[in-house]
Image 1 (cartoon, protein in one colour):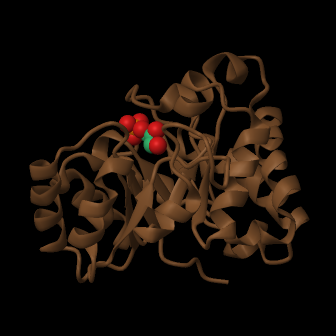
Image 2 (spheres, rainbow, N blue to C red):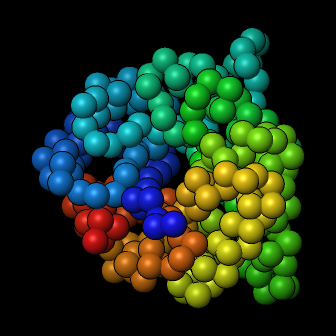
Length: 250
Ligand code: 13P
């Protein structure tokens, strides 16, 4: 089966402001119409309303960076899956390593968040990845399999509706990228785990994330089990993100 178009997702993390966002989208949408890849931007929750308007009618889908594990209720500061849906959110990152680390999100919480997203028709982008210490201890495969297993277990046959992002923690924001071979090795492990769980696992895009730029994207995206990228730093400037989209469209 030939590969579906690559999926490139920008994760702005805690960056952006009203005027910069508008300028970014104007610059981006002026050039994206002819590109072959799929693209989305995961923006801070407060900018979803603005970005929904700015991206409407464009080829760029809207994404969020997190959602509540609860459906509704007395959870001060939380944003529910249904609220995201109100703003035409198509994707939501769950289990990013920064949330696992700084907000103590467990595998079980991440699995419930994926469930909440799927329940309202949002595609969860489930992040998995090992720390440097875990890689050096030879635990990479065990760690990513444990993280994905929790999501598979909680989501059963819906698992073919998720997107997975392999983000080695040591490669995030460091300028250190996994080599194409290192990425492929882990992606192949994740792919076979998905295939064991669902006969429709071929539908699942498995993205690579961690210091991906226009310079290293082509080699990473050429790997058989790499279906796109989750991009932090290089999604903050429209021209950088555009260069990546172009690299993914070749
Ligand atoms: P960088 O591309 O800045 O390394 O960030 C990757 C990431 O964490 C995307 O979610």
